Amino acid sequence: MKIPRATPGNKTVLLTGACSGIGLEMARLLAARGYQLIVVSHREEPLHQAARDLRCRFGAAVFPIVMDLAHSKAAEELFERVGSLQLTVDILINNAGMFFFGEVADTDPTAANRMLALHVTTPSLLATLFSKGMRSRGKGHILFVSSISAWRDFPGIAYYGSTKKYLRGFANALRSELAPYGVNVTCLAPGATATGLYDPNVVPVDLAKKLGVMMPAESVAQAGLEALFNNEAECLPGVLTRAMTAAAVAMPQPVIDWIRRRGPWLKSG
Ligand SMILES: NC(=O)c1ccc[n+]([C@@H]2O[C@H](COP(=O)([O-])OP(=O)(O)OC[C@H]3O[C@@H](n4cnc5c(N)ncnc54)[C@H](OP(=O)(O)O)[C@@H]3O)[C@@H](O)[C@H]2O)c1
Image 1 (spheres, rainbow, N blue to C red):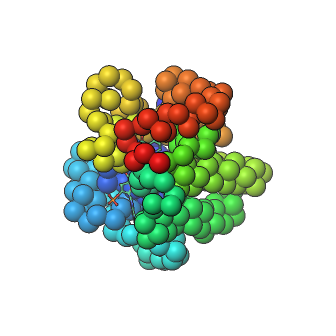
Image 2: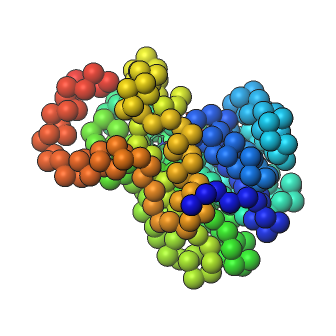
């Protein structure tokens, strides 16, 4: 299955977290196929740079919106901003995300609150606000970017893994609700991917990419978009990702706890 070219009735994409990593690669793949993009990120300069690049390389229509999506009113604000552009969103991609290691008791409540808003409140409410129009038009696509950490509960990333688990469940339920109306919902669950999500002082991303332990963001973006346009429920990109997920599901909890106690990326408990 290839990513189809945009058509007049299926051409406007709202993509969060578009200035880097998997989101930027998705933006490039879509722009190359004639989609117009409303791209949202928090940092102004990287987002405007990405928008300029997409216009230059692909001649795409790109509408950047700089917004902090990690607060409780972000979805409503974004819905209003998109409304003022007078564009109909055909495809919603909830990709923006953040990551931190750390035990629950050590987590800064502000950071925890931001992750809960960014991974739970905002994507859920964006789906609520935009799916209504899709449902009445009888078409549309929504993609949620979860993670393989949704398949198993890991100590040390409780906030991250649990919010990604929520996204997976939400996507599955919403998929059943919207399918009768012709609207597709897909959940993309990447494994380790070489992006700026991780602190390079803690995770050697470049080395991991060279060793093939981390997938390139382009491959993950390609797999996710193919799954979306193929109306698939879930996508775990890459053989290693699927193998790691199966292993994590099968692994006894004491083994996971042993790894956690020895992991150099976590303070000892
Ligand atoms: N990399 C992996 O190994 C991996 C594995 C599984 C799942 N994922 C998921 O994949 C998605 C994309 O992450 P990535 O790996 O591509 O990392 P990334 O390069 O760091 O991309 C994250 C994107 O989210 C945006 N974002 C973060 N906080 C935001 C906020 N408060 N408001 C608006 N935008 C915000 C960032 O824009 P700004 O920098 O401008 O804020 C950036 O464009 C995330 O949901 C992540 O959880 C990644």
